[in-house]
Length: 475
Image (cartoon, rainbow, N blue to C red; front, side, top):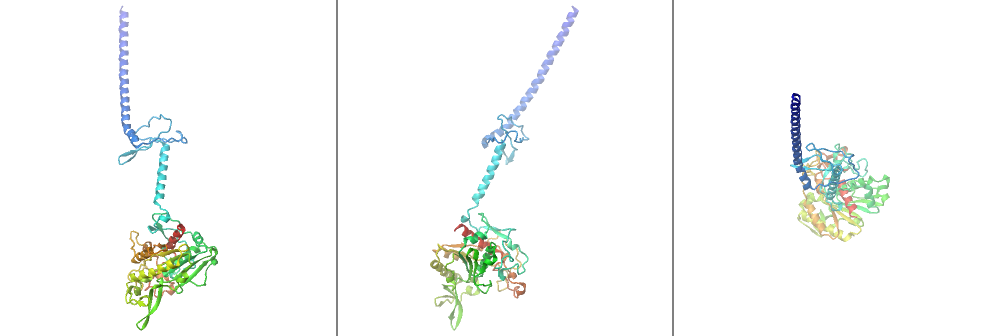
């Protein structure tokens, strides 16, 4: 009996120990389970803002069969564990991009690639839209940019630059003035192509008419075209004349293209002459009659006119016993009035003698001078200027240009204005100054500097580029 009781007591104790152990294990298990559920609840709460953002931004998964889950690198956010992959595709929560409190999430590799491509394409489309077609573009709105590929010719490669414009040959050492290219802001313009230009004027006459600033532009055009010629001997002056200041009429033939590039000097477009005033014959300007060389301009296929430079001369400024109409010599006439009358005489000649179906007519605006400390004949200088004017400077628009525009609007013949005034005003660095003559010929060069004409290569190359663009896109 004692043994049975002892066994019963021991059995009871063992049984109670097992029950206690079981209860303790259960408590520990449920405690751990509760902690695990609590952690999962927190995870769900943290993800809810992302879910709402994903809904509001309407991000869609873009599937691409060419990208497999194994190929796609998985980027894991440091804030949240990766979501369970339930679809079989490589879903990739991208890094959080937090900007101004916003979160942007890309959930698929292929979608992120396509988003980037779409953005890039949109940027390219915007650029295309902002860059207007050349025929719609204002090429005068732009800036000068330094271009290491410039110049397109040099004093050594072009035999047509006369002494007055050959600054490098005359000893100018700072050559950055050759390196600047005008870049229009609103359009992507093609560079000057000499071969294309020669093809456009094949069998034609390109004629420049005006003062020595137009001779400047004409020599520039000769040099630019000459770079495309294979045999230099096939370009020659038809009268075997050498270019100088003294002789004003030239015709250079490009034999391989059967075309000529010509220049006719006329300071005012209208006729310079003499008239009896009192007992003396004095110089006058016939503002009602065309220059005597005008008959030679007829038949040209492209005409480029200019006048402005000489209208600032002391005779034209004062206007005393100088301007003539018929037999009348005006005792005094305002220069602006005289300038307008002369342009009206010119415009009447163009309307009467030019067939717009056969001839393109251009008029180049006034080119600025940059004299400092006086005028050309009173100590004015620009020798120390070897940099552009700051391009925050706003160019002025001269009264002469306004008169030109008014006259052109009244003509029946279409005339294209080559507006070079504003962009040229920045280029105080590009005048010959004392380098308009060789060192041995500089007698008065220290006292009289040239701050009106332009070194070649230089600014007139841009004027000819404008001419080229007009001919190229409005044929």
